[in-house]
Length: 312
Ligand SMILES: [Mn+2]
Image (cartoon, rainbow, N blue to C red):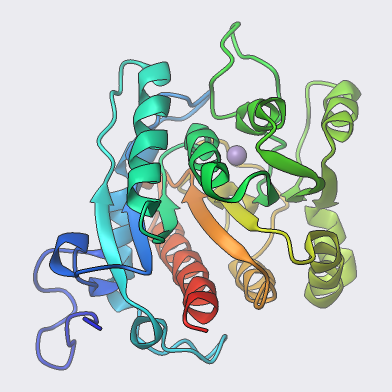
């Protein structure tokens, strides 16, 4: 196993940034888990800038240490984790970008590597789900987000950051017995948004529900619905309150704390996680790297969950 750069010998702030100072994918024979960037934000409806997230999150991840007490695991000792670099996509053509992402994600997973992907805007979840379902069939989905992301079109366009999960249901790549939004809040276009969403099969645990029920009850309810199904976790960083994630494209007041999000993610231990993404970090609106730090820690816990499972 090739671990991260030894921070007792080379200071954390020195040298090029890979996620958690891990080796690059081309420096290891095989990776059980790879962290991959998708610098793409052509699908946004409001503030752009998520194309700069992969590099910002890598910079913010320099301080991550090798032992995760929250999950009692040293993920980089348990399995081989590597930084898979960025999937380079056409910023001027959403359709082509989606095809590129799906094929690159499928290639990366061809030999059993599990992916934690750093977006990018939420458009990228669709091709990532398509790639994962090629291997596992329809997957359960936990979607952490202020927004539903099940709208039909924007300006007549079907592929945007507000529509990936409606397209995924239409594709038949989600197991609609086990798909849930977590952390939704904020005003909608109309009540029909919620009716359409329910018709697609989604359950909703709102941001207020998380506050009222608490983390443990929230986790129990989510776990029951998922069972042993293959699970994909998609985390829009705007699920956090703007106080915890100001650097994002469509902020909404009244969100979760980073502590709540990390605790819910840790509560997924033991489930059949097959892939995950963290999207919508927009560094230009960030302050003191608050959002990038939160995203790097969430990604670390997702890597840790995969390490626990893959290292069995
Ligand atoms: Mn989203």
